Structures are given as structure tokens and as C-alpha cells.
Image 1: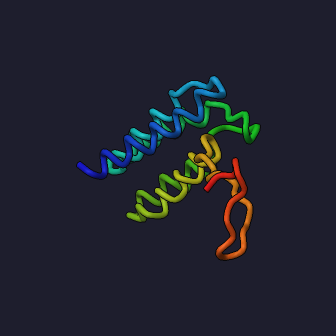
Image 2: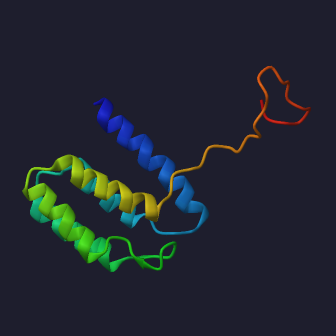
Length: 119
């Protein structure tokens, strides 16, 4: 149950970032379906094929290219689930980069922030 909640939170935050760019969420739905069901390799291959037909404007390429699709499917067939998840995560990060932490200026230890400067 906690894994499902963490996936929900992960994809909810990614959707917020995509909404600001007015991009469709269909690819995120596919990524989530793949991530929650890594045992059905044929279904995953079909979903990866569909993601390969979708364009990623951030990289000027498909969301999942053919070589990555093959590598994910081969890793799953070989029982290397962690490798497949890492490849999926890299594709997802290229499509919907996670929010960057707020930039803070480096301070000396014990230095107080200036008025109006974040904590």
C-alpha cells in the first residue's frame, strides 16, 4: 500500500510540471502502468512501443527510443528488474524532469540570511 501511495505522489508531482508546459499526460499514464506491472513483459513491450511513437520536445526525440525499449525488455526477460527500472527512470526523467530544489546561495556557517532571502 505504501508503494502505491509513493507512486501516486511521484506521478502527481510530475503531472504538475507537465501541466505548466501544456503537455499531455498520456505518456505519464503509460509510465505508471509499466512501473506498477513489470511482470507482463508483452504488455510492457507494447506500452514502450507506444511511448516510442510519442515525441519528447525536450530531447527532440521519441520518449523511449528503440534501443532503450529493447534494453528494457531484454533486462526484464533476463530477470534484471532493477536495470529495467533504472532505464525506465532515465526515460521518465528526460520526459518529465523532476522539480529542481530551490536555489540557495552558499553561506558561511553561522551567517544569518538577509531580509527577504529564503531561510
